[in-house]
Image (cartoon, rainbow, N blue to C red; front, side, top):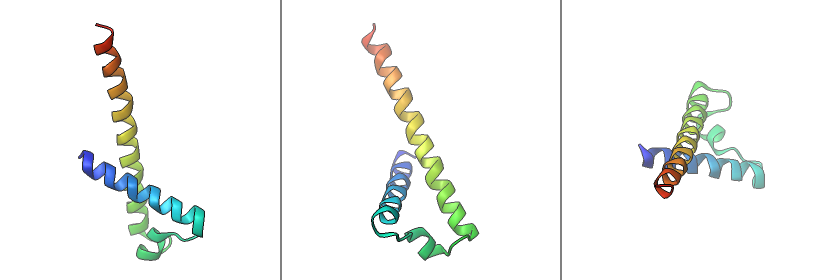
Length: 69
């Protein structure tokens, strides 16, 4: 699960980089703009980012608990 979330997060970051630097949306060019497939890809990337954020927050709080012992 961690690898899948990491890959999806990287894909999302690279896509935003392309949009920001070149004005090119790779996801839209592959799946078509406004299609259900495009929305699925964006939804999966968003869920992956949320998963990564939750893991990061819980990992830091778990490390603090270990240090405070």
